[in-house]
Image (cartoon, rainbow over all chains, first blue to last red; front, top):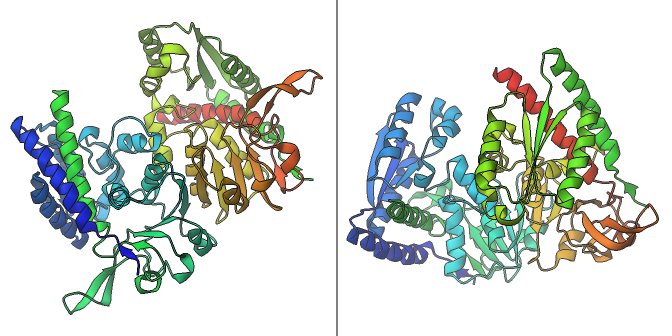
Length: 295
Length: 295
């Protein structure tokens, strides 16, 4: 039986710390506030928004939602971001991505307009440069940082150990590789073109599943003693859920197959995903603290 | 006997192509020009400058050198970079790094002032962001790109294969990891804190030595069939050189020990180092072409 790495414990500890910091800010007349921009009404976006709303309440962060139709014109979006940039009552801004429809093509251009100090989910080039270079200011993507928070909370050491990240996206794979390098792990990035993925994973001390492929991580990928963080949230319409119906999120791991082998594993749902919003709130608090010092 | 991956053949092919493109630019009234900023008279800087001078001649690129004392005031350096940014006859600018003495502390700030389109060696945050994100405009660091050019020239496939990069610097390790990921290699980054480095390297198809530790890559690190690119230029004052005297550069590989085992190896000197300047010139040509289209 592997140890279950539960996200809710990590999130609770983080939110408690955030609440203390938010209270200290309140004492200085600052109420940390997050703006969320949502274009359209995508299910994933609404689900993330709801989870952010819960975390905001838990962490003592105010939320302002800007909801636009998916048909919104580029210029309107640029104007809104400019307004948020200059609004000193807003400390962080989350643009829900990927942007829908035709906006997808200009997503990078739109994200680049956000003031770097308010970029709490690493969508600007400036924040990405800081992450890659390991210097300069910028917040890492919340999900990648959530993995690091999981490892820290559960006392899993990284220094000198082999971590394999499956996936090379800008949301998890690449940024997490940089964060793990910063923690002195030896880091391997695997992806859809990787040969011998099972063999590579078996040699790791820490495996991070961020491929978005349900059931990818099978018995062949693991050995006793390993830690497996499963980041992916793949929707499986036929899987029984905890409410007795059908439809549930599943990770990249074939959970029932690998759980009896590894030393520790994060479930899906209930793992890393629950920590992401807590990281987001901490970033907002940090941004608010930064705005105070910058005054 | 391993195949010797010689830099001069790669550089010659690249410079020939650059010359053709420079001639085409000349036909449109543009002479591609590189500015080099050197602060002080460090040996490494002067040696790189000389090699750039030779490559510039070979590639048909004009060179303008700005030589400042190592005691130069920050503001003078900022002013010079601003002047280069606004000088339309200069297409690329190389700031020789690391900056000496007290300037080292503000190096990042200074480099950030360079116009991104003239940043031919990836010293600005914008170019680093583009490299990390795999989108947007920017030139990768010349030495990292030189490794890719070596692999391409000698027909060494990367897709799906395991590449191990030893070193996590911003000059080679991290950027090369991104470039190799872009070529669909499975990439591992090792560094001074890595445990089992020999074992990890033995499993690779391609090993890249960029640690700056002479003799690090021993017999234990290699197996038949591997390709070894040795990027490091470590000065060994006691090593016999080709002119019959003492003092020579050596790489990270214990060359005599590993050369009989691997399939191909780049020597030091004579390997990757010779390609770096050719990459620099190609970047200048590309920047000049870009300026033409931007007009």
